[in-house]
Amino acid sequence: MARLKTHDEALRLRLLHRAAATVFDRGTAALSLRQLAADVKTSTTAVYSLFGGKAGLLGSLYEEAVRLFAERLATVRPTDDPAGDVIRIGLAYREYAVANPHLYAILFSDRSVQCPSDSDRPREVVETYRPLVDAVRRGQRAGQFGSATDPEIVALSVWGTAHGLVSLVLSGNEPPELAVADCYERALRALVAGWRHSEEPVAGLAQGT
Image 1 (cartoon, rainbow, N blue to C red):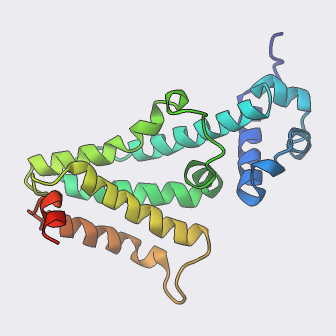
Image 2 (tube, rainbow, N blue to C red; image 1 turned 90 degrees about the horizontal axis):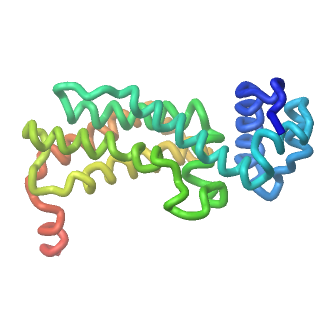
């Protein structure tokens, strides 16, 4: 059956964002297609027409979160200062999370809202991490980072720092009288500065303990 004209992209996005808010607040078990349709002032027929059912809705929800995240990171264009690019990617990471807390939670918190296997995940899942690794590699070629260190280790440390600080904010667990927003960029810069002055292979450090 042909999709009705009223079941358009605008409606699909409204349903996705409302579903994201529900999952963020109460989990996937609380997501009712009937209630979702009522909240968006449409019919359950529209939901089934657009997504095929709850499983299709959850899959589309995850894919939309990934797509928007990848688009935001891709706005950080490579420059002749790769170490600075690493910091700018970290800032873009935070900006996405703060602007889209529901979708961010779908990506990194609620593991039930994901594709059933790695082979089913959209290509963009891998692409979200690639710009950061590429920036580190460019930094190594430019002499900004030690060439003996695995670039993915450097990228992972930056990613983990960004994720940890953002998670403190979104979960409401910021330390008293210390706003993460005020120190987020400083923390990234300090981390990148540390890697810039490190010439020791990560494996060598581990073996020296």
